[in-house]
Amino acid sequence: MNALEREIRSLIENAGPIPVSRYMALALGHPRHGYYMTRDPFGASGDFVTAPEVSQMFGELIGIWCAEVWHAMGEPARVHLVELGPGRGTLMNDLLRAAKVVPAFRASLEVHLVETSPVLAEAQRRALNEASVPVRWHNSTATLPDGALIVVANEFIDALPIDQLVRAEAGWHERKVGLKDGQLVFALDPTPLPRIEEGLPAQLRGAPTGSLLESRDLTPVREVAQRIATHGGAALFIDYGHVRSGFGDTLQAVREHKVTDPLRDPGEADLTAHVDFEQLAVAALREGLHTLGPVPQGAFLRALGIDARAERLKRNQDEATASTIDAALARLAAPSPGMGELFKVLALVQPALTAPPGFDS
Image 1 (spheres, rainbow, N blue to C red):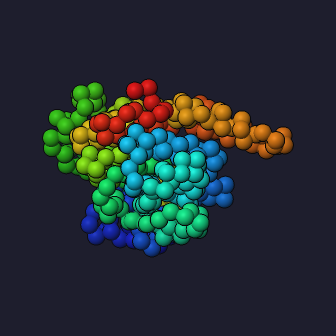
Image 2 (cartoon, one colour; image 1 turned 60 degrees about the horizontal axis):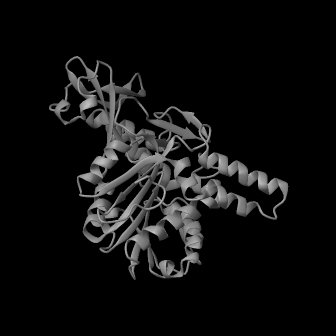
Image 3 (tube, rainbow, N blue to C red; image 1 turned 30 degrees about the vertical axis):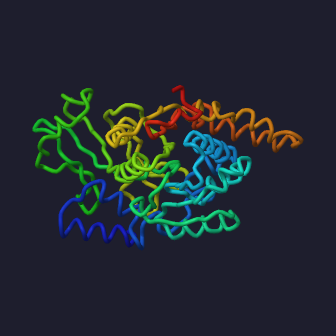
């Protein structure tokens, strides 16, 4: 039993079972024992690999997308380029390198990284040490400055804590983490929650007994959307999940690239849950923004020219390097086992903005 599990057990023993969102927040963000507070989880030697770590092509194409958004915004002299959950800084580093092809765009940038992990913030400082653009760090979206902004968030939403509700005969009950026979277990709060049904999308009402519904606090999305509605700009969210709200338990833990029990060794594995893109879009629409997508990541990257970029990178390369580039292209853009279909891309834009590339409209 590790230190965080002892702390969670003590919390449950003293105050009763805790919401899944509370458990997830502690497992990921506990200041001393949280998963992201204590390690760099990325890459082959970590627990999982994200798209920016697969190939430079990903960040480069996002950079071109951002430049196109800046152009559609009227090429403002100053724009805040924000990344939510910047990982090692790999995406931002590749993005800024690609931005050099549009010098006026790069010169307009002030970079803001929203990061809670001191370990990853240090990795980002190393990656961006020679970026030659102003870079500032924030613990949350609440402290982002006023002004026009372009926001990028790759695999950020999936790590935001979720709540889980289960439909029983008496109504919807919150699923919590408690103790049974000395083990952490999932259990339902015995008291049904009031007025849940009327707040659900039409397709989720009248759910059969046993249905499990997930929701998450989208405060960062709302705060970003409010700033875009006021000052102009766009946000790009790339993550894995489903286009329409639905039922199902998607909470998962990954350790050393393998799925494991989410209640085992809290703080030692990454915890995520699928993104509900309908819920994400509704949050933005309520703030007065327009939404584009979601579209599959593969289609988005191909619309931005990833195939041509791969061919350029392969020029004058040996066979092994060319094969590595082809493998990266397949992983980023092809269907399963690639990321091309599971991962989706959603843009949130100010109403007057011309649709940026990668979306049909």
